[in-house]
Each structure stands twice: as C-alpha cells, then as structure tokens.
Image (tube, rainbow, N blue to C red; front, side, top):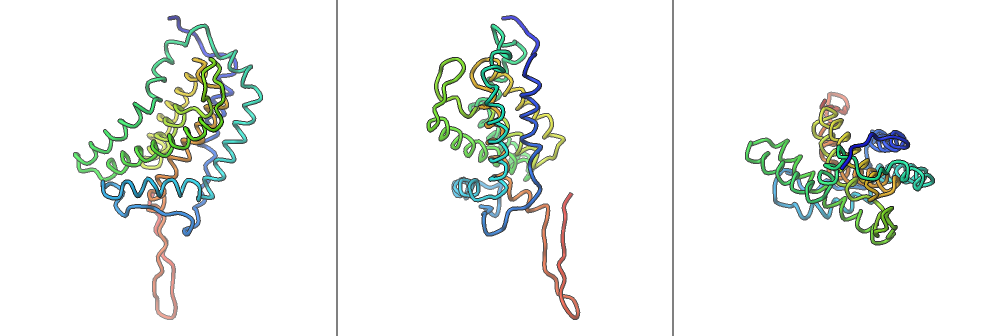
Length: 257
C-alpha cells in the first residue's frame, strides 16, 4: 500500500468542513421551543427520556434550522464539483496516513468512546467528564438516527458504486463527538477533535466511500446533533434571575466563563 500526498481539491473541501462548526451562531433558542431533559445530566435515570427529548429539540431548535440550512447550502455548492473533486482526490489506493480515519469515524468506535468517557467520569467522581460521556452517547444516537433516515430516503450511489452514500455516517459521528467536547471543554479539545473529524472526512473521500458533499452535510448533521444534546451546557453558562430591590426590581445576569 503506497502513501500519497493529498492534492487537488482537498484543501477546498477541508475548508468547506471548517465552515460548518465555525458558522455556529451564539444566539440562544427560545425557551418554550426546546426542553433540556433530565435535571441531572450525568445520571443514568431518565437517559431514554433525554434521547427522545433530543429528537424533538433537533427539529424544534431555530439555531439547528439555521445550521441545517447553512450545511445544506455548502453541501449543495460542493455538489456541483463532486465528480471532479472525487476523481482528483482519489489515488489508486487510500493513502496509508489516512486509513485510521475509517476506524476512528466508525460508530462502532465513537459509541464505545462515549460509554468509556461516561464510565471513567463516574469512577473518577468527575461530573463534568460523566456528563461529557453521556452527551457523546446521546449525540451518536441522534446523529446515527438522522443519518440513516437520510441514507435510506435518498439512497445516493457512492463513488465506488455502493448504495446509501448521503450523508456520511463517519463524518456525522466524528463531528458530533467533536462538538460535544468543544461545548464541555472549549476549543482546547474542540480544535484537535474537529481536526480529527476533518481527517475522517478526507479519508472517506479518498477511499471513494463518499462524495465531498456527503461528508460536508454529514459534518453539519454531526455538529447539529452535538449542539442539540448540549443545550443544558450552554444554559448553565448564562443565567438570568429576577431580584427584588427597594422600590422596584432588577435582573441579575450570571455569566460562567
């Protein structure tokens, strides 16, 4: 198996992937539109209920609608060059340096990663780590559900002739994990895990498992899934409380940085 340098359209296609998480808007969703699920995100109780809340929040969130529209526009733009970029990005064999991406982006890797993170967090007594692992698992369930719904509905032919190309499940899974980690730990973990997700997406294109637009929309889908399950994290950062004062009232805003 020979190694090869990435060339041609790969920088453009990676740039399209970067646009997806970078385009997330800071606006908060309206409170009546979404539910946060369990009051204790790190516990096992209520997990199934939270998963069903995730499905509702996925479609009810105005922010998700904006992200989906943005991801769809970028994917549609990339779609016009799918065949050209796929041909130029695909060497006679997948570059050896990219082959681990097929394993890392697989749901069979990402789902146990979340379970492991969850368990280690509980054992170590870290609520933050346990919440993170729990949210990774929820994001994988949500992302896989929507990805496979689209796969079987669209049934797009892959570059190698196989069915169910759109969207990329590997891209969805890896970007979902990256988004959850960014929400819980900030960009110190977000950047390396988003880079790993882009690495997975590049592998799927060079291996001719997916068209570039498949992985771009998969990246958007994974980002939305990760954002959906971490609503409780963003709401904990900004709290507004009414407070009585002599002669009137006031609003106290608590911002956690």
